[in-house]
Length: 423
Image (cartoon, rainbow, N blue to C red; front, side, top):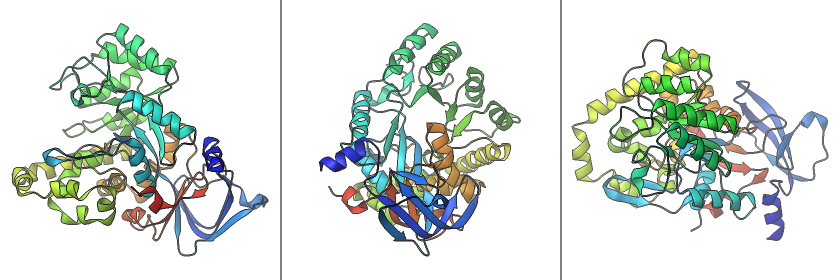
């Protein structure tokens, strides 16, 4: 309807909403409080000021309310499984699936630039409802470097001069972050340190945060030296002495992508992970079956032990970051094997807790801290955007309870989740 289009276009909810008798889970304070949330014009307002609310009252007795989850590293075209199996409905459909899964925002860190740019504009003008799209739009890499192998056009730079031109040109499209690939010791060509420095400096001058794809601890140090905002992924080897505090003292954020780094073994060898109802709802039976073919099982069974050892190293690096006070954000790198859009955000939180983070830390990584990084106000306090997930059980008692979704509230509106999933 025209009214609905106006509502979404202005990001203002149509009606007011009052949530009563809720267990409100606040990752910013680490407290659970019993009480009310009052929502007006898509924003949480101060209930103590008793605003005039003209709308729905929802009794959430026995329910738990968390801020909407956010996915800080994805490629939202769809899903890919072993054996060349694809479930590729496109980013608009994926945005709807994510919202169904309680993910109210996501950061796409490389897809088709023009498609992502146009879709982000269409969403902002109110043409469709789905999780809020944030995007790097492109991937900044060397000629024939990582990101060029997918058949999707990307931006390349091979010198500091190239970097300044490329980043300045991309800045005209207002990317939410700049994604830069830096892997000098990898199998594919990479930009050098001088080019990295120029790219980060130019992005910073344009007010754009930078996310650096790294492969090694040397790469981490170079990203810190360059003044990067964040790094993504986890090096293969154990974290060297001093690297956790280096990141903490430099205020460099990490997006570890534990799901893509460690979940493939679980997809292959722990049937419960893909038998999960949300996993099955978020993708096609063909994707799930692809992990269960005899050929794939045999191919990976010999590597099962090394995959497990690799997971232990990566989980321990994330724990070291957390212990040093590094800000960690939830991003799964969905779009790759061992991930499923929407489901993998919840898996990422489970993996963080397996690493030794508290459920509070895991929850903050996908909610309040994610909002801080994106320049938005996500939470359950007055002034925060009213993107909320109502759960049947406490995520602090068990982080996997983030999957027990009773309903989703997006921009102050109770979402018809089933309508999102209609083909």
